[in-house]
Length: 192
Image 1 (cartoon, rainbow, N blue to C red):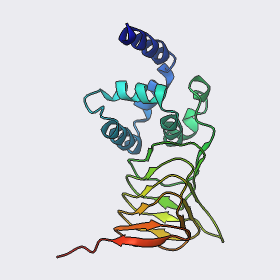
Image 2 (image 1 turned 60 degrees about the vertical axis):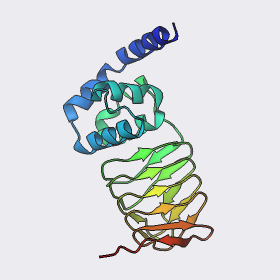
Image 3 (image 1 turned 90 degrees about the vertical axis):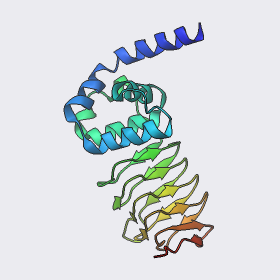
């Protein structure tokens, strides 16, 4: 019975998202396709079709809505009311690579000069400007709950920023930064 109710709820909600599906199909943004693939992998929905997963995430994950509207740009303005975005999540970065994943978007600001591929962010994170500049973030970076990454700094590839860390200086590739102010506690040195 529970499964039947869930399927009815999904079907009713899916019908109000027809314009979202059309925009998704017509715009065919390769960056958003990469985002969707990553969300499918992280939520173990690889076997679902893109449309089925897309609808599931739109209905149940408000962070995904913000990401979709961000990728679709002005074209999404007229349909946002059908499936409201999370009003405490702000994405103000011109260039973000594919694979953006926002696990919990509550009270997040993502405002960088650029962000690479596979950026992962949790709740209450601030990525933003200070002293006249925005951060540049590399590929495969994870920023954990409550962390702040601020100023004209560079975060390298394959970096973890620990919970509640305050990063105000560059972080090299393959590192973990924690603390206030953040310091490097782990640095993987590749061997040849």
